[in-house]
Amino acid sequence: MASQQVLHIAGWNTCGFYKRASGVLASLSLLFPTKLKVIDHSFSSRAEYRAWWVDGGFRGNMPDTRAQSHTSSPACWIASGTELKGDEILSWVGGCDDTLAWCRDFVSPCDGKKGEVLKLVEDGHTADHGYDYDLVVIGGGSGGLAASKEAASLGAKTAVLDFVKPSPAGTSWGLGGTCVNVGCIPKKLMHNAAIIKEGVAQDAAAFGITSTGGEHSWETMRENVQNHIRGLNFKYRVNLREKNVTYLNKLGKFVDAHTLEVTDKKGRVSKITSSRFVIATGGRPSPLKCEGGELAISSDDIFALEKSPGKVLCVGASYISLECAGFLAGVGHDVTVAVRSILLRGFDRECADLIGSYMADHGVAFKREVVPTKLEKVDGERIQVTFSDGSQDVYDTVLVAIGRSGDTEKLGLESVGIKANEGNAKINCKEEQTSCPNIYAIGDVMEGIPELTPVAIQAGINLSRRLFGGSTESMDYKNICTTVFTPIEYGTVGYSEDEALEVFGKDNVEIYHKFFTPLEWSLSESRSHHQAFTKVIVDKSNNKVLGIHFLGPNAGEVMQGYGTAMKKCITFKDLADTVGIHPTSAEEIVTLTVTKSSGADASAGGC
Image (cartoon, rainbow, N blue to C red; front, side, top):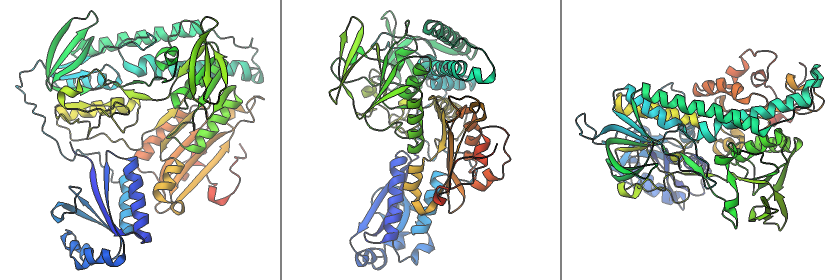
């Protein structure tokens, strides 16, 4: 399935309009590498450009009469290939203004249409194919379960393979994948434990509630969280049976494009065949590569620790690292975060820095611009860490969260001509289809998509409907909400401020922002001076909202509805015309009036 657009731009290299348009296109190609490929044709002078474009007659290849009178720089068009061939030209885009308008529609289309698969690559599936299954899904996480159940509901004979390879520390888990077992679910529950403890210890007295300080038991929390997870594991098994999906607790490896060698937990090997496959193996944490790195644990292990983690070092500035650091500190642990460069790379820089400041104010220590260079056991079970700046400290637990790689190492991809990326072991796809036409991929194992559970679920459902239900609707990976569950929660959808400025230009972007104190914090002496924050990023040319960011309580609940609004291409006027619910934190987004460009005070006043 082909979805990547090839866009050509030509102009002379000193032309300001050419440089502006080509710069925006270059940024978009970096942000959306699977959706857009830009071919830049740069000429050394105006005369050289005109000799090729006008005198040489290349513009005559354009299928649009407007191009025949176009003499200026740049010239932009869409083609089927990357070479400078007239017979590959598909459509004319235009000059600088038209190209920028095309870019705006590319990043946030407002035609109200669902995503359409541009072209289906024939995968050889027929009703009488003769294989064991119509579809085998490799991976029993959220995306794999969604894809398998949807396919079965559409009449496909379906099986799902789920075999959990234990973490290096020996942790394993049941059906449901990362989110249910070692991700979203236990993380959110432990984050909630930290919120409850903070409320009891710091806020209760201000509301007239007598408390004893809210002592925390790691063992009790862990047991209750794991019991909840086991209940979900069982529920998923039942759901598969009810949906007529065959469950195989086996490890799969490709032998050829239609055959898997499967191994059960006792080492017994057999083979199964299928017309189609979906790879939904997700990702696993990247290890710490230094002397003694094997002494560290990862997010695959922290939620199942049988004893209190004690004094903790979190290595990395990813959202996983900061979320774990936040709830560990919140329930009373001594926590330090080792940061190599910046916090929350890929998120809004201003919001990331505000999160860091809030966490520092709430007991999380940060070691900046360092990485561990050596881990070694001391005093029995404790771990001494040597850092790149020469400093040392001793911890009870070292938790590494420096990134994740696709879980593809033992899939036998080489047997079917699929090559995983060297850096992160993920698979490049077009509309979830790999380079082997009957093998597809969804979720975190795919390159270039948001690593989010709802994304994998929706992609799995959409894919099964295309494969077995006659649908042509593709997955729309743009404007997807997410929330980071740090001590001050962060909900976001759309562009960060830095991204918007880079893509649209400083003169074309307006930022509306506000600092405010949530009402529920206002009585607590320990929290009344802390402020939440929100901002909305707007394209000045058409008033379209490019991004919404919110730091404060219940950020995920606040942001979900705005995600729908972003899908419908909301304008800032739409926000301003919306009557808020009072008193809530969510209303702060629809009452924004202060812009960054005005230089006015962004602190909220009144009730």
